[in-house]
Length: 127
Image (cartoon, rainbow, N blue to C red; front, top):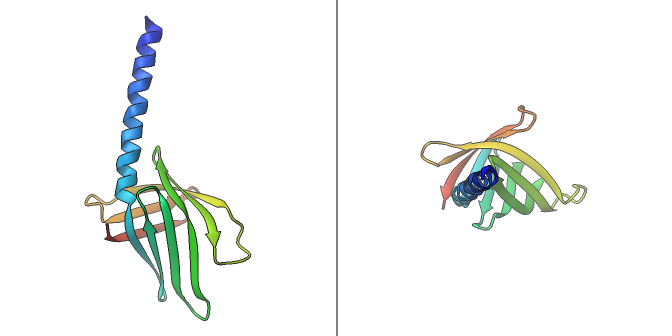
């Protein structure tokens, strides 16, 4: 009997996590921008399936950097997997994990790298 109760409790918690991940992924969908200062700006477009395209502009004499991949939210962690990069010497695929949270109105996405030192704020400009 205890086994059945434990199985039901585990099933309910896993389905709740799945719904939470889907809601979070839906919040991620859209166009996000981040100003890094000095005229450098990134634009990230995230599709409903998690696929994304990123463009970084504003580096002096460096042109435009482009990256593609996926951003998937799972259990409170945003996994950014880069599968294509315009920097020819950048290794792909590569992944970065971020701790994240949304602002109360969902218009900002705050990212904190696993090392705690790398932080970024993205502002949603289009759903």
